[in-house]
Image (cartoon, rainbow, N blue to C red):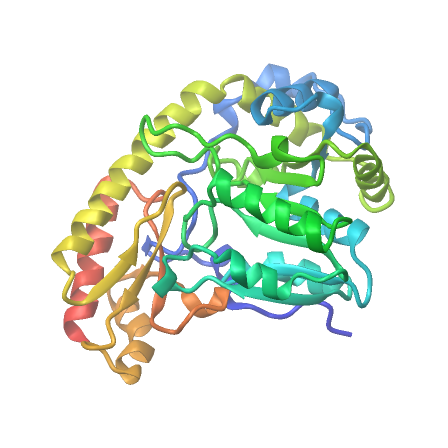
Length: 370
């Protein structure tokens, strides 16, 4: 009966810790930030279109760099990942991804019966994949390569040059396969750092998926999208959506459009906040360099820490979450993502800066007790 594996990452949608460093996004927007009561009261609650509201698709297309007819609006980014897997994969087909990774991204591949092969991208490698590992795993059976940039849990991004090389490798080994890039954190740059262009323009074989959950602060809208320049694939994604959920919520689409109309100032404020959070986290890591290592992220409100094996044995690593809890602090366990036990994901975007400082002090206290 089981179609999806259980993973403790589900605890993130339960009760929050006092100082929650396990979360991967910034503070939530509020309904009043987007629409007033009168506008909401006049909103029609009829069916939407399977592809998504045309005005919303236009706004997303301008953000991604494609045409509006190359966008499919989905119920969150997770539906975009699922629809791509459902359309492109069947039992016995091969999908190539990475490990560690966001667990649901692997689960959707397994749920459709695909044989999932994972390229290792370990902490020791800075979470940067080696093209030689893809060459080893790709085959004529490969139908989908599913990656994320920036990655979750590390926040490390894939370069355009790497993606171009990977596409060339796929063209030689599995020319029918598509390359999916989950770009949910792409716009979550730090301060005035440039935002990387979407990979969707690299090839008609590229699918870009994303949502408003992370960079834009609206996970409660459950609004995402898939963009592809392959017209046949786009048609199949629309049909798959129609035959599962018919359309997105009219309320969610209207709120998403209002958010994107205000996208500039919303992202500017959040990027300043993330830059501040990253700087405080980096300073904390520097002060505790004898106890922990880290991989500095390229974008997003997340990074990975690793307890040094020279200072903490396996028993101490196992006690660490309980020690954190004594100070009301929670980190995301690396094991949730298939990472080594002594790695933890730290989110520096959700808490206010005073609370982030307090959380990092609690983290210091827990390490001292170990």
